[in-house]
Image (cartoon, rainbow, N blue to C red; front, side, top):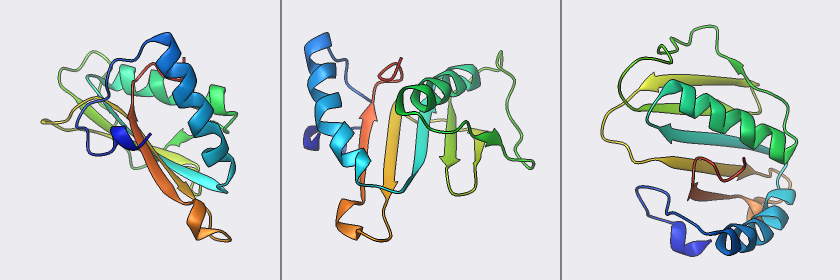
Length: 128
């Protein structure tokens, strides 16, 4: 997990690497009460697909688009950044150039601050 810190873009992982990374990640996630997620993707459709796959795999409730969010068209050109927050139950999405690609998850644990951390960037299809 530590070797991912500081990467601009998620690395490509083979099946064994994905399995090992998931084994390391799951107990760390279990120590947290709620999460924020950041997804850097080449399109809004890709970001939302990665969000929904993450929610399904981790058994999270589905986040809703913020009422103030201006979600770029799925066919729109250019990279996007999706920011989701379980505390609010919402996500926002904006076009942003100069990003890499990947998923960043931050765990929040008010009762156990030592469990809090940020993990990633993970490949966009990591939770698929």
